[in-house]
Image (cartoon, rainbow, N blue to C red; front, side, top):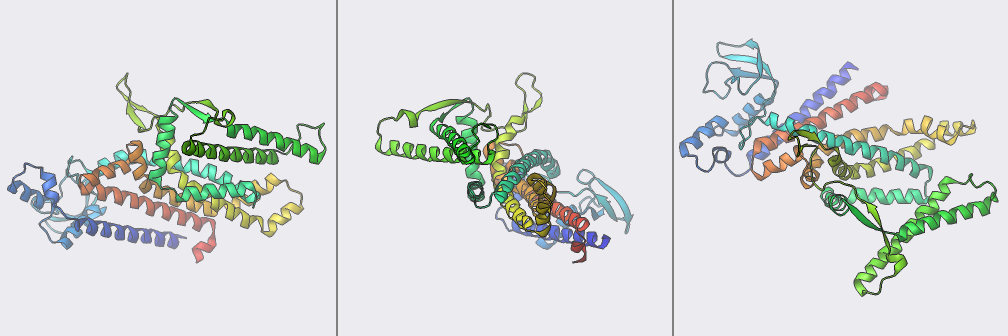
Length: 440
Protein backbone atom coordinates (compact mmCIF):
# COMPACT_ATOMS: atom_id res chain seq x y z
CA UNK A 1 0.00 0.00 0.00
CA UNK A 2 2.91 2.37 0.77
CA UNK A 3 4.31 1.78 -2.72
CA UNK A 4 0.90 2.56 -4.22
CA UNK A 5 0.64 5.86 -2.25
CA UNK A 6 4.18 6.92 -3.16
CA UNK A 7 3.54 6.20 -6.84
CA UNK A 8 0.35 8.31 -6.82
CA UNK A 9 2.17 11.20 -5.09
CA UNK A 10 4.99 11.06 -7.63
CA UNK A 11 2.46 11.09 -10.47
CA UNK A 12 0.88 14.14 -8.85
CA UNK A 13 4.21 15.98 -8.77
CA UNK A 14 4.80 15.14 -12.44
CA UNK A 15 1.38 16.55 -13.34
CA UNK A 16 2.08 19.74 -11.38
CA UNK A 17 5.49 20.03 -13.04
CA UNK A 18 3.84 19.79 -16.46
CA UNK A 19 1.21 22.39 -15.50
CA UNK A 20 3.82 24.84 -14.19
CA UNK A 21 5.95 24.37 -17.31
CA UNK A 22 3.00 24.95 -19.64
CA UNK A 23 1.83 28.02 -17.70
CA UNK A 24 5.30 29.61 -17.63
CA UNK A 25 6.04 29.27 -21.34
CA UNK A 26 2.48 30.17 -22.31
CA UNK A 27 2.55 33.44 -20.42
CA UNK A 28 6.18 34.15 -21.36
CA UNK A 29 5.12 34.08 -25.02
CA UNK A 30 2.46 36.73 -24.36
CA UNK A 31 3.27 40.06 -26.07
CA UNK A 32 4.00 43.10 -23.92
CA UNK A 33 6.62 44.15 -21.39
CA UNK A 34 5.75 43.45 -17.73
CA UNK A 35 8.37 45.98 -16.66
CA UNK A 36 6.35 48.81 -18.26
CA UNK A 37 3.29 47.85 -16.25
CA UNK A 38 5.23 47.42 -13.02
CA UNK A 39 6.94 50.80 -13.50
CA UNK A 40 3.84 52.77 -14.44
CA UNK A 41 3.27 55.38 -17.11
CA UNK A 42 5.78 57.88 -15.76
CA UNK A 43 8.73 55.51 -15.22
CA UNK A 44 12.02 56.50 -16.86
CA UNK A 45 14.06 54.20 -19.08
CA UNK A 46 16.52 53.66 -16.24
CA UNK A 47 13.73 52.63 -13.87
CA UNK A 48 12.29 50.26 -16.48
CA UNK A 49 15.72 48.70 -16.97
CA UNK A 50 16.16 48.17 -13.22
CA UNK A 51 12.71 46.57 -13.01
CA UNK A 52 13.55 44.25 -15.90
CA UNK A 53 16.72 43.20 -14.09
CA UNK A 54 14.87 42.71 -10.79
CA UNK A 55 12.21 40.55 -12.50
CA UNK A 56 14.86 38.60 -14.38
CA UNK A 57 13.49 39.68 -17.77
CA UNK A 58 17.02 40.39 -19.02
CA UNK A 59 17.90 36.69 -18.76
CA UNK A 60 17.35 33.95 -21.37
CA UNK A 61 13.97 32.25 -21.08
CA UNK A 62 15.44 28.90 -19.97
CA UNK A 63 17.28 30.59 -17.13
CA UNK A 64 14.09 32.47 -16.14
CA UNK A 65 12.25 29.15 -16.17
CA UNK A 66 14.86 27.58 -13.86
CA UNK A 67 14.58 30.55 -11.47
CA UNK A 68 10.76 30.25 -11.47
CA UNK A 69 10.97 26.55 -10.58
CA UNK A 70 13.47 27.41 -7.86
CA UNK A 71 11.03 29.94 -6.40
CA UNK A 72 8.12 27.46 -6.49
CA UNK A 73 10.02 24.51 -5.06
CA UNK A 74 9.79 24.04 -1.26
CA UNK A 75 13.45 22.96 -1.29
CA UNK A 76 15.64 25.32 -3.32
CA UNK A 77 19.15 26.67 -3.76
CA UNK A 78 19.97 30.30 -2.92
CA UNK A 79 22.84 32.73 -2.52
CA UNK A 80 23.02 34.16 0.98
CA UNK A 81 25.62 36.93 0.46
CA UNK A 82 25.50 38.44 -3.05
CA UNK A 83 22.52 40.83 -3.02
CA UNK A 84 22.67 41.44 -6.77
CA UNK A 85 22.18 37.75 -7.60
CA UNK A 86 18.83 36.47 -8.81
CA UNK A 87 19.27 33.61 -6.32
CA UNK A 88 19.83 35.97 -3.38
CA UNK A 89 18.06 34.71 -0.22
CA UNK A 90 15.97 37.83 0.38
CA UNK A 91 14.18 37.50 3.71
CA UNK A 92 11.42 39.83 2.44
CA UNK A 93 10.57 37.39 -0.38
CA UNK A 94 11.31 34.04 1.24
CA UNK A 95 10.23 32.60 4.57
CA UNK A 96 13.07 30.07 4.57
CA UNK A 97 15.11 27.84 6.87
CA UNK A 98 18.64 26.82 5.88
CA UNK A 99 19.07 23.05 5.59
CA UNK A 100 22.72 22.86 4.56
CA UNK A 101 25.54 24.90 2.95
CA UNK A 102 27.30 23.97 -0.30
CA UNK A 103 29.89 26.72 -0.13
CA UNK A 104 30.48 30.11 1.42
CA UNK A 105 27.58 31.58 -0.59
CA UNK A 106 25.31 28.73 -1.77
CA UNK A 107 22.82 27.17 0.66
CA UNK A 108 19.99 24.66 0.42
CA UNK A 109 16.85 25.99 2.10
CA UNK A 110 13.34 24.84 2.96
CA UNK A 111 10.78 27.54 2.29
CA UNK A 112 7.17 28.37 1.45
CA UNK A 113 6.72 28.35 -2.35
CA UNK A 114 7.19 31.89 -3.65
CA UNK A 115 4.64 32.97 -6.30
CA UNK A 116 6.28 36.36 -6.96
CA UNK A 117 4.54 39.74 -6.51
CA UNK A 118 1.71 41.54 -8.25
CA UNK A 119 2.83 44.02 -10.90
CA UNK A 120 0.08 46.46 -9.96
CA UNK A 121 -0.25 46.33 -6.15
CA UNK A 122 3.23 44.94 -5.34
CA UNK A 123 1.55 42.54 -2.88
CA UNK A 124 2.74 38.96 -2.60
CA UNK A 125 0.70 36.76 -4.95
CA UNK A 126 0.29 34.13 -2.23
CA UNK A 127 -1.34 36.73 0.06
CA UNK A 128 -3.76 37.81 -2.68
CA UNK A 129 -4.67 34.25 -3.74
CA UNK A 130 -5.18 32.84 -0.25
CA UNK A 131 -7.16 35.91 0.77
CA UNK A 132 -9.70 35.26 -2.02
CA UNK A 133 -9.55 31.45 -2.09
CA UNK A 134 -11.71 30.77 1.04
CA UNK A 135 -14.69 32.56 -0.54
CA UNK A 136 -14.40 30.42 -3.67
CA UNK A 137 -14.04 27.22 -1.61
CA UNK A 138 -17.19 28.08 0.38
CA UNK A 139 -19.06 28.72 -2.87
CA UNK A 140 -17.84 25.42 -4.37
CA UNK A 141 -18.79 23.47 -1.21
CA UNK A 142 -22.29 24.98 -1.19
CA UNK A 143 -22.76 24.23 -4.90
CA UNK A 144 -21.60 20.62 -4.54
CA UNK A 145 -23.78 20.07 -1.47
CA UNK A 146 -26.83 21.25 -3.40
CA UNK A 147 -25.89 19.25 -6.51
CA UNK A 148 -25.10 16.05 -4.58
CA UNK A 149 -28.22 16.10 -2.41
CA UNK A 150 -30.70 16.87 -5.19
CA UNK A 151 -28.84 14.80 -7.79
CA UNK A 152 -28.86 11.60 -5.73
CA UNK A 153 -32.57 12.02 -4.92
CA UNK A 154 -33.46 12.56 -8.60
CA UNK A 155 -31.21 9.65 -9.63
CA UNK A 156 -32.94 7.30 -7.19
CA UNK A 157 -36.39 8.40 -8.38
CA UNK A 158 -35.35 7.85 -12.01
CA UNK A 159 -33.86 4.41 -11.35
CA UNK A 160 -36.79 3.00 -9.38
CA UNK A 161 -39.24 4.45 -11.93
CA UNK A 162 -37.35 3.55 -15.10
CA UNK A 163 -39.16 4.64 -18.25
CA UNK A 164 -41.79 6.57 -16.29
CA UNK A 165 -42.68 10.24 -16.22
CA UNK A 166 -40.17 10.82 -13.40
CA UNK A 167 -37.37 9.21 -15.40
CA UNK A 168 -38.09 11.23 -18.53
CA UNK A 169 -38.38 14.45 -16.54
CA UNK A 170 -35.02 13.92 -14.82
CA UNK A 171 -33.43 13.21 -18.21
CA UNK A 172 -34.74 16.52 -19.54
CA UNK A 173 -33.39 18.30 -16.45
CA UNK A 174 -29.99 16.61 -16.87
CA UNK A 175 -29.67 17.48 -20.57
CA UNK A 176 -30.70 21.08 -19.90
CA UNK A 177 -28.23 21.39 -17.03
CA UNK A 178 -25.31 19.95 -19.00
CA UNK A 179 -25.95 22.06 -22.10
CA UNK A 180 -26.60 25.44 -20.44
CA UNK A 181 -23.43 27.61 -20.17
CA UNK A 182 -22.66 28.83 -16.67
CA UNK A 183 -22.55 32.51 -17.66
CA UNK A 184 -25.97 32.20 -19.34
CA UNK A 185 -27.58 30.53 -16.32
CA UNK A 186 -25.87 33.01 -13.97
CA UNK A 187 -27.39 35.94 -15.86
CA UNK A 188 -30.88 34.41 -15.78
CA UNK A 189 -30.76 33.38 -12.11
CA UNK A 190 -29.28 36.70 -11.03
CA UNK A 191 -31.97 38.63 -12.94
CA UNK A 192 -34.92 36.48 -11.87
CA UNK A 193 -33.87 35.62 -8.30
CA UNK A 194 -32.22 38.91 -7.40
CA UNK A 195 -34.14 41.53 -9.40
CA UNK A 196 -37.56 40.32 -10.57
CA UNK A 197 -38.26 38.19 -7.50
CA UNK A 198 -36.46 40.22 -4.83
CA UNK A 199 -39.63 41.77 -3.36
CA UNK A 200 -42.64 40.18 -5.05
CA UNK A 201 -43.26 38.12 -8.16
CA UNK A 202 -46.54 37.48 -9.96
CA UNK A 203 -46.80 33.81 -10.92
CA UNK A 204 -49.30 32.40 -13.43
CA UNK A 205 -52.17 30.73 -11.60
CA UNK A 206 -53.23 28.38 -14.40
CA UNK A 207 -50.41 25.76 -14.02
CA UNK A 208 -51.17 25.48 -10.30
CA UNK A 209 -54.88 25.11 -11.03
CA UNK A 210 -54.14 22.19 -13.35
CA UNK A 211 -51.80 20.77 -10.70
CA UNK A 212 -54.70 20.66 -8.22
CA UNK A 213 -56.94 19.24 -10.95
CA UNK A 214 -54.33 16.51 -11.62
CA UNK A 215 -54.19 15.63 -7.93
CA UNK A 216 -57.98 15.38 -7.85
CA UNK A 217 -58.03 13.14 -10.95
CA UNK A 218 -55.33 10.97 -9.39
CA UNK A 219 -57.32 10.45 -6.21
CA UNK A 220 -60.53 9.65 -8.13
CA UNK A 221 -58.69 7.22 -10.42
CA UNK A 222 -57.08 5.40 -7.51
CA UNK A 223 -60.34 5.06 -5.58
CA UNK A 224 -62.24 3.81 -8.64
CA UNK A 225 -59.59 1.21 -9.52
CA UNK A 226 -59.15 -0.09 -5.98
CA UNK A 227 -62.71 0.40 -4.72
CA UNK A 228 -61.45 1.86 -1.43
CA UNK A 229 -63.65 4.89 -1.09
CA UNK A 230 -64.05 4.20 2.62
CA UNK A 231 -60.26 4.26 3.20
CA UNK A 232 -59.51 7.74 1.93
CA UNK A 233 -56.18 8.07 3.74
CA UNK A 234 -54.64 5.00 2.12
CA UNK A 235 -54.01 6.25 -1.39
CA UNK A 236 -50.89 5.85 -3.54
CA UNK A 237 -48.60 8.84 -2.97
CA UNK A 238 -46.46 8.10 -6.03
CA UNK A 239 -49.43 7.90 -8.36
CA UNK A 240 -50.96 11.01 -6.86
CA UNK A 241 -47.77 13.03 -7.37
CA UNK A 242 -47.47 11.73 -10.91
CA UNK A 243 -50.94 13.00 -11.80
CA UNK A 244 -50.23 16.33 -10.11
CA UNK A 245 -46.93 16.90 -11.92
CA UNK A 246 -48.48 15.94 -15.25
CA UNK A 247 -51.27 18.43 -14.63
CA UNK A 248 -48.74 21.14 -13.77
CA UNK A 249 -46.71 20.59 -16.96
CA UNK A 250 -49.84 20.55 -19.11
CA UNK A 251 -51.02 23.79 -17.53
CA UNK A 252 -47.58 25.38 -17.93
CA UNK A 253 -47.55 24.40 -21.61
CA UNK A 254 -50.98 25.92 -22.20
CA UNK A 255 -49.93 29.11 -20.38
CA UNK A 256 -46.72 29.42 -22.49
CA UNK A 257 -48.74 29.00 -25.71
CA UNK A 258 -51.17 31.64 -24.43
CA UNK A 259 -48.34 34.12 -23.73
CA UNK A 260 -46.77 33.48 -27.17
CA UNK A 261 -50.12 33.91 -28.90
CA UNK A 262 -50.93 37.04 -26.92
CA UNK A 263 -47.58 38.65 -27.84
CA UNK A 264 -48.01 37.81 -31.56
CA UNK A 265 -51.74 38.32 -32.18
CA UNK A 266 -52.52 40.63 -29.22
CA UNK A 267 -55.93 39.06 -28.63
CA UNK A 268 -58.05 39.80 -25.60
CA UNK A 269 -57.13 38.66 -22.12
CA UNK A 270 -58.46 35.26 -21.03
CA UNK A 271 -59.17 35.61 -17.26
CA UNK A 272 -58.69 31.97 -16.32
CA UNK A 273 -55.41 31.41 -18.20
CA UNK A 274 -53.98 34.90 -17.79
CA UNK A 275 -54.66 35.28 -14.06
CA UNK A 276 -51.73 35.55 -11.63
CA UNK A 277 -51.13 35.46 -7.91
CA UNK A 278 -48.42 37.27 -5.89
CA UNK A 279 -45.52 35.30 -4.46
CA UNK A 280 -43.45 36.79 -1.60
CA UNK A 281 -40.00 37.92 -2.67
CA UNK A 282 -36.73 36.15 -1.97
CA UNK A 283 -35.10 39.21 -0.44
CA UNK A 284 -31.89 38.31 -2.27
CA UNK A 285 -29.51 40.70 -4.03
CA UNK A 286 -28.43 40.12 -7.65
CA UNK A 287 -24.81 40.82 -6.68
CA UNK A 288 -22.92 40.54 -3.43
CA UNK A 289 -20.16 38.59 -1.70
CA UNK A 290 -19.98 36.50 1.45
CA UNK A 291 -18.25 39.17 3.53
CA UNK A 292 -19.30 42.82 3.43
CA UNK A 293 -19.21 45.92 5.58
CA UNK A 294 -22.22 46.51 7.81
CA UNK A 295 -23.78 49.92 7.14
CA UNK A 296 -24.41 50.60 10.83
CA UNK A 297 -21.37 49.18 12.64
CA UNK A 298 -18.78 49.53 9.85
CA UNK A 299 -17.47 46.04 10.64
CA UNK A 300 -17.11 43.00 8.42
CA UNK A 301 -20.30 40.92 8.38
CA UNK A 302 -21.19 37.58 6.81
CA UNK A 303 -24.07 37.78 4.30
CA UNK A 304 -25.00 34.12 3.86
CA UNK A 305 -28.01 35.00 1.71
CA UNK A 306 -25.63 36.12 -1.03
CA UNK A 307 -24.42 32.52 -1.27
CA UNK A 308 -27.77 31.07 -2.45
CA UNK A 309 -27.99 32.30 -6.06
CA UNK A 310 -24.35 31.72 -7.13
CA UNK A 311 -24.28 28.29 -5.45
CA UNK A 312 -27.49 27.34 -7.24
CA UNK A 313 -26.02 28.50 -10.56
CA UNK A 314 -22.69 26.75 -10.06
CA UNK A 315 -24.36 23.51 -8.95
CA UNK A 316 -26.61 23.04 -11.99
CA UNK A 317 -24.09 21.23 -14.21
CA UNK A 318 -22.76 18.80 -11.54
CA UNK A 319 -26.39 18.21 -10.52
CA UNK A 320 -27.13 16.93 -14.02
CA UNK A 321 -24.06 14.64 -14.05
CA UNK A 322 -24.74 13.24 -10.56
CA UNK A 323 -28.37 12.54 -11.44
CA UNK A 324 -27.47 10.47 -14.49
CA UNK A 325 -24.57 8.70 -12.74
CA UNK A 326 -26.76 7.75 -9.78
CA UNK A 327 -29.49 6.48 -12.10
CA UNK A 328 -27.22 4.34 -14.30
CA UNK A 329 -25.19 2.97 -11.39
CA UNK A 330 -28.28 2.15 -9.31
CA UNK A 331 -29.94 0.40 -12.27
CA UNK A 332 -26.82 -1.74 -12.67
CA UNK A 333 -26.80 -2.65 -8.96
CA UNK A 334 -30.53 -3.42 -8.91
CA UNK A 335 -29.97 -6.12 -11.55
CA UNK A 336 -27.45 -7.99 -9.37
CA UNK A 337 -28.19 -11.40 -7.82
CA UNK A 338 -27.96 -10.26 -4.20
CA UNK A 339 -30.72 -7.68 -4.81
CA UNK A 340 -32.98 -10.42 -6.18
CA UNK A 341 -32.14 -12.49 -3.10
CA UNK A 342 -33.06 -9.57 -0.83
CA UNK A 343 -36.39 -9.25 -2.64
CA UNK A 344 -37.01 -12.98 -2.30
CA UNK A 345 -36.41 -12.74 1.44
CA UNK A 346 -39.22 -10.21 1.67
CA UNK A 347 -37.16 -7.13 2.57
CA UNK A 348 -38.99 -3.85 2.18
CA UNK A 349 -38.45 -1.63 -0.83
CA UNK A 350 -36.74 1.10 1.21
CA UNK A 351 -34.46 -1.41 2.94
CA UNK A 352 -33.32 -2.82 -0.42
CA UNK A 353 -32.65 0.62 -1.91
CA UNK A 354 -31.03 2.46 1.00
CA UNK A 355 -29.35 -0.36 2.97
CA UNK A 356 -28.08 -2.53 0.12
CA UNK A 357 -28.23 -1.04 -3.37
CA UNK A 358 -27.40 2.64 -2.83
CA UNK A 359 -24.17 2.00 -0.89
CA UNK A 360 -22.69 0.07 -3.77
CA UNK A 361 -24.06 2.44 -6.39
CA UNK A 362 -22.41 5.57 -4.99
CA UNK A 363 -18.77 4.76 -5.91
CA UNK A 364 -18.86 6.51 -9.32
CA UNK A 365 -20.85 9.34 -7.77
CA UNK A 366 -18.12 9.94 -5.17
CA UNK A 367 -15.54 10.10 -7.96
CA UNK A 368 -17.66 12.59 -9.86
CA UNK A 369 -18.21 14.73 -6.76
CA UNK A 370 -14.48 14.93 -6.00
CA UNK A 371 -13.62 15.82 -9.59
CA UNK A 372 -16.40 18.37 -9.92
CA UNK A 373 -15.45 20.09 -6.66
CA UNK A 374 -11.97 20.77 -8.01
CA UNK A 375 -13.34 21.89 -11.38
CA UNK A 376 -15.78 24.28 -9.71
CA UNK A 377 -12.84 26.25 -8.35
CA UNK A 378 -11.86 27.01 -11.94
CA UNK A 379 -15.41 27.12 -13.31
CA UNK A 380 -16.49 29.74 -10.79
CA UNK A 381 -14.80 32.50 -12.79
CA UNK A 382 -17.84 33.70 -14.77
CA UNK A 383 -20.29 33.01 -11.95
CA UNK A 384 -18.24 35.07 -9.50
CA UNK A 385 -17.95 37.89 -12.00
CA UNK A 386 -21.68 38.10 -12.70
CA UNK A 387 -22.71 37.85 -9.04
CA UNK A 388 -19.91 40.13 -7.79
CA UNK A 389 -18.57 37.35 -5.58
CA UNK A 390 -15.22 38.32 -4.07
CA UNK A 391 -13.38 35.09 -4.86
CA UNK A 392 -10.36 33.90 -6.74
CA UNK A 393 -12.29 33.74 -10.04
CA UNK A 394 -13.21 37.43 -9.87
CA UNK A 395 -9.63 38.29 -8.92
CA UNK A 396 -8.38 36.25 -11.88
CA UNK A 397 -10.52 38.23 -14.36
CA UNK A 398 -9.34 41.54 -12.87
CA UNK A 399 -5.72 40.40 -13.22
CA UNK A 400 -6.27 39.33 -16.84
CA UNK A 401 -7.77 42.71 -17.68
CA UNK A 402 -4.73 44.46 -16.21
CA UNK A 403 -2.09 42.01 -17.55
CA UNK A 404 -1.05 41.26 -13.97
CA UNK A 405 0.60 37.97 -14.95
CA UNK A 406 1.95 36.90 -11.52
CA UNK A 407 -1.60 36.93 -10.12
CA UNK A 408 -2.91 34.95 -13.10
CA UNK A 409 -0.10 32.38 -12.96
CA UNK A 410 -0.34 32.03 -9.19
CA UNK A 411 -4.11 31.52 -9.26
CA UNK A 412 -3.89 28.92 -12.04
CA UNK A 413 -1.13 27.02 -10.23
CA UNK A 414 -3.08 26.98 -6.93
CA UNK A 415 -6.25 25.73 -8.67
CA UNK A 416 -4.20 23.07 -10.50
CA UNK A 417 -2.70 21.98 -7.18
CA UNK A 418 -6.24 21.50 -5.83
CA UNK A 419 -7.05 19.28 -8.81
CA UNK A 420 -3.98 17.14 -8.25
CA UNK A 421 -4.36 16.83 -4.46
CA UNK A 422 -8.04 15.87 -4.66
CA UNK A 423 -7.36 13.27 -7.36
CA UNK A 424 -4.52 11.79 -5.30
CA UNK A 425 -6.75 11.56 -2.20
CA UNK A 426 -9.52 9.89 -4.22
CA UNK A 427 -7.07 7.35 -5.71
CA UNK A 428 -5.60 6.58 -2.29
CA UNK A 429 -9.07 6.16 -0.76
CA UNK A 430 -9.95 3.71 -3.55
CA UNK A 431 -6.77 1.83 -2.75
CA UNK A 432 -7.88 1.43 0.87
CA UNK A 433 -11.46 0.48 -0.03
CA UNK A 434 -10.73 -1.89 -2.92
CA UNK A 435 -7.55 -4.06 -2.87
CA UNK A 436 -7.98 -4.75 -6.59
CA UNK A 437 -7.05 -1.12 -7.31
CA UNK A 438 -3.74 -1.52 -5.47
CA UNK A 439 -2.91 -4.75 -7.24
CA UNK A 440 -3.69 -3.39 -10.71
